[in-house]
Amino acid sequence: MALKEEIQKVFEDSIGGSADNIEKLAEGLSTAIERFITKQTFRVDKLSMTHKGLETLPILPIMTDATGAIPLITTAIGAPIMPISVPTRKISIFSIGVDKDGGESDNPIQNGEAQSNSSEVRLRENEVNRNY
Image (cartoon, rainbow, N blue to C red; front, side, top):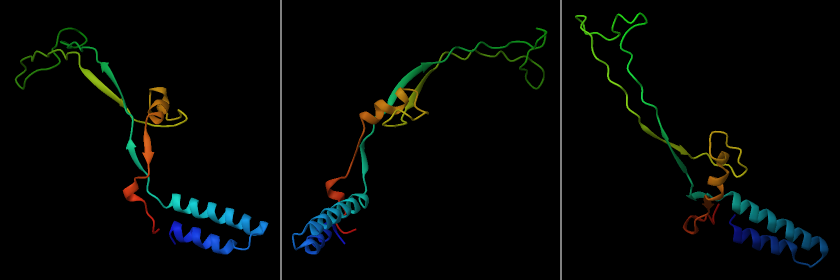
């Protein structure tokens, strides 16, 4: 039954004006509205994500074994291959865990509270399910 029909039925059931009927009307309306809302699909229209840059440290090549005598990397015939340094790299860290109470443990930035406060979830008008 759709919300309109549920509201109409609640009014019909409460006709008479007594205190019991008014209480029945209030209870019926709240139940109909609750059922209507819980049958809807809410979608994320705006989700905040935090970006934080991180820079790695350069890695210097290890040229020899612990004795300092044998190159660690060689060709099949035993010729040493000169390793190259790994340069500094920029890495992006994206935080998308969202928690209105800041309890999202995988989000390093305010535990997701800031993202939750700037995100929006709503029922889109063209997706209202009137015949649930």
